[in-house]
Length: 232
Image (cartoon, rainbow, N blue to C red; front, side, top):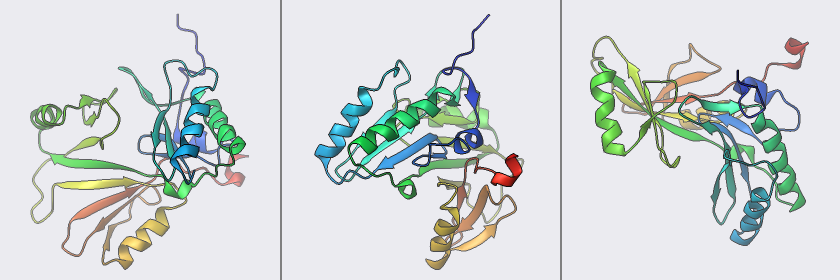
């Protein structure tokens, strides 16, 4: 019998977004992410040190990317059985935000995004092994349609099943996951830059856009919080 703890209780993006005290964070395609605008490498290094000193990090330490302009932190559980968020990430996110505040470092949720490459495949079983070998990627837990970088640096690949080839349409496109409160702004910018809206049937979670030559891309949102009135 397995005892449930905060480390193994799985949660959906919506649960994370509806929890108080997580305003610095946004769930995108690869977990809960935050960007802290430090303004210098030295300040960023101090923030990384503070994150490393938080209690209870254990095996599920956050992914941290330190650059001169800021620090990006990602929270996600990656095991052979699960790829996603747990209750533990809620308290960890709060602790990281508190560490940033103690150093006077502001969060910039608008700077968060992840990118995924999607390939249309008539036979995933035939196609996926090629890309797995070429990229040096691994299967994502719980899916035979997704490949992820074991170092968690490169963009994941998703293999979308199709029944027949689609004439006059590209079979490889980019999915851009953005914060739920930035999707409309990002879409408007893409349209103003010459793009067009192809399909918004799945809005407000997904929009299909195309560039002036018809190459497609999707804008995705993970679990926006429900309006307060709907939660009561």
